[in-house]
Image (tube, rainbow, N blue to C red; front, side, top):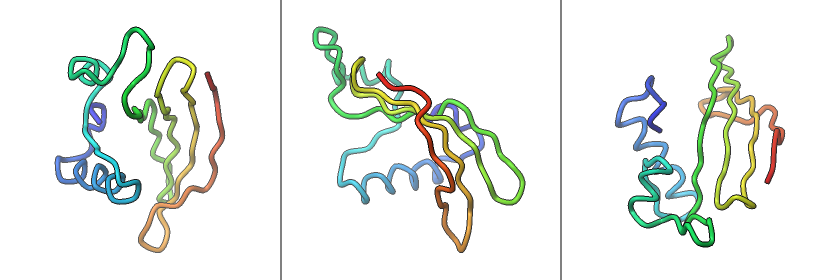
Length: 104
């Protein structure tokens, strides 16, 4: 979440806790390089011990709508990029549209 300049630390913790509670996994705020330094990346198999979620582009639209591009990386042959439109309605964010934009 190093590029989430609009969020404070509490908001970042809320995002991490969401994934931790929903998927019952260990969550952390780290870049690929930081995960590599901590030993989570195996350069021989080119795989990550876990999943790296990234948000590359964010475009805040009018009417509580956000367009973003993101990706999920586990390995060079296990990654996917998506483009999503989410809308804030009835007190929660809901996916309005989502599509794959690349896959490896």
